[in-house]
Length: 164
Image (cartoon, rainbow, N blue to C red):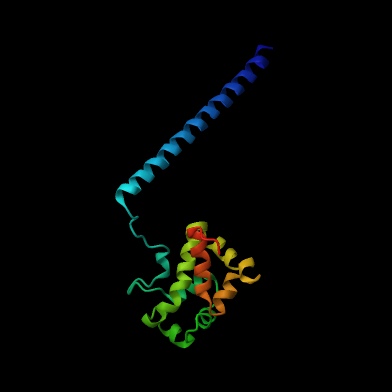
């Protein structure tokens, strides 16, 4: 019989201890966030960092259209035509200097999505999900229709908290 009485007390004590630890953890996380914000204000702007470096050619550092297409799970031909580039030229030199301007909004869109979702599979799901601000079209359809800048703007505005 004493075992029956003791068990609820131990469970209750453990439960109370967990709640105390959670409260302490919440307080520490709040203090940490405040300290990080203070450090950021002292340092000034955040150091630049490269997001999705695997989408760049290792030799010249430029965006690689083939790697971009592979990441998005679309054929290179479809991506090239979607951003209004000559497929044969892109196939020969996927990181060609003259292609960078067309590839930049696609890469930037993927950077926003990577910061939000981290997983490439989740990014691809988002790209293939109809969006109400695109009249029910997917972001991938919009990019492939030569309007990658629209997706970059949509995501950039959302990232900055601007209501479109």
